[in-house]
Amino acid sequence: MSQPPGPNQNPHTQQQNYSANNNSNVFANNGAGNQRIRIHTTGQRPKRTWAWITLVGLLIADVASYQYGQSAYTGGVDESGDLTRATVFIALMIVTVLMLRICGRDIKDRFF
Image (cartoon, rainbow, N blue to C red; front, side, top):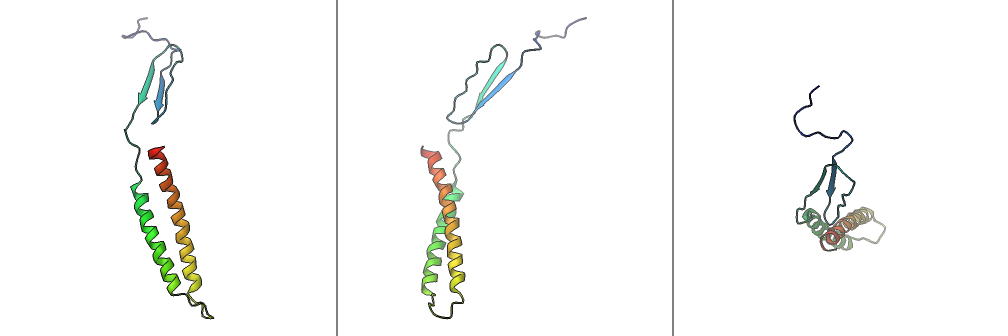
């Protein structure tokens, strides 16, 4: 029986693949065998500019909603739109806080 051309390989040897993320280490010391270590660095982390633009827009909408709600407040018996304006403002504030958290993670990823 003839062997196929090429080097003889041990069937018990496995090829090992390792990959690293940014700012991480790869330790490859698992005995004999082919070891391939891939480290792809892009240099910069992805920026979340969409989050910053959205945050600025939400802050402007928060200020405008607050000013409109204050100027249109009736304070009397006719409270037809007061609850609606307050609900819209609170919903905007919740979304703004969520966007602040995303932007905070962006600052943490960039600088720390």
